[in-house]
Image 1: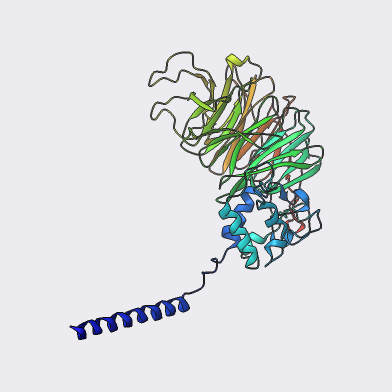
Image 2: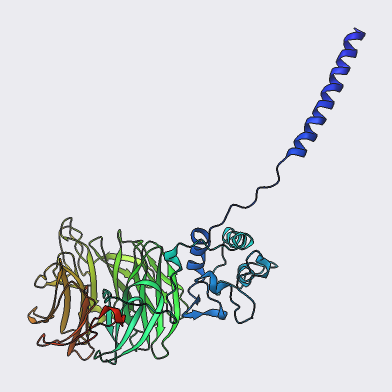
Length: 484
C-alpha cells in the first residue's frame, strides 16, 4: 500500500514537471502577432479617397493645396508646407493626421461630412506605414487636368450640350471636360476639366451663373460637378456610386440639382453644400433623366425600366407612375424628358422619348383613380422618329420642341409644334447617330451633336444648316478641319 502511494506521488510530480516544461516551450515558440496584410493603393485606398476626398482635393479644386488624385501630388506640401504623404511615416503625413480622430474629437476631414470608418483609417495608415506603394495600372496613372488637357486625335462623341440662358455660350461634352464655346461656334472660350472621364449630361443654372455636369468612369465612380461659369472654377465635385451619373436638372430657384444613377436611384443635392436632400429608389433600372416641376414641389424621372415616375420633393415620397403600368404598353426604356415651359404648376406637362421612337406629352398629375390598362396622363403621342430618341428640348415658351434620334449609324433631328404636333422642320446635314439637342434661348436656332463629334447649328424654323464644327481641339496629326 505504501509502495502504491509512493508511485502515485512520483507520477503526479512527473506530470506536473511535464506540464511546466510544455507550457514553457509553448510560450517560447508562440509566434509574434501577424503583421497587417499588404494594403493595395489601387484596390483599397484609392476608392476611399475617390469617394470621400477627391471632390475637394483634385487639380481643379485643391483644398488646402492638397491633391489626392495621384500619389505624386500627395507627396507635395500643401498650404501648411507639410507634405500630404510621407511614405513609411504615417504620423508625419498630413493626410493621416487630418482623417484621424484625437482626444475624442471628430477629425478635421472630410470637412462637413461624416468621419471615415475606423477600418478605412486603419487601411490608409497601414498603407502609409508599408511605404505608400503605388500599384496603379498604367491606365490609372494617366494625368488629365488643366496642365495636361485631353489630346484628341478624332472628334469625341457628343453626349450632351446646352445653351446658356443669355445665349452667350454653348457647353458641349468632351472627354474629361466640358468645352465652353461662344454660342455661334466662333471660339472655344474655356475647357472645364474634371475627374469624370465620361460626361453624360450638363445644364446651365436658371440664372446662367453655374453649370452642372454629371458623368463618371463606368464601373468605377460617378461624379457631379458644379462650375462657376464666369470664373471657370469648379465650386463643387461630389463623388457617388460606382458608375456614371445621368440626367442633371436644376430646381427653378437654382438651389438644388437632381440626377439619376446607374444604381437605379433618383437623387438631389444642395448646390452650395453638396448635401443630399433627396433619395428615391422606386425605379428598377438605370435612371437616365430628371426634371423639376414648375414650382419645384415634384421631380419627374425616366428610366430604362420603361417608366416615368413622380416623386414629392419635400417628403422624398414616390407618388405614382406618370406613364401606363400596363404590361407591354411601353416598348422599351425611356431615355429623356423635358418640362414644358409657360404653364401653371397645376397643369405641368412633360415630354419624353425613348426606345420606341415616339415623343409623348404627359400631364404629371393624375386627376382620376388609376385603372389597369389606362394611360390617363397621356396628352398626345407625336409622329414616330426613326430609331431611339436620345434627347428632347422645349423652346423657352413651350410652343415647340426639338427631338433627336438614332437608328443604326444614322440620326435625325426634327422640330415640332407642341400643341397640334405639326412638323415644323427637319434639320439638314445630320450625319450619324444624334445623342443631344438644344434650343437656343431665343428659339431661333437649334444645336445638335452625336456620334461623329460634330456640333451642328441649324435654323429652327427652316431646318437649314447654319454651321458645323468640331468642338474639341484636334491634334495637328489628325489633319482634320475644325470648322466649315
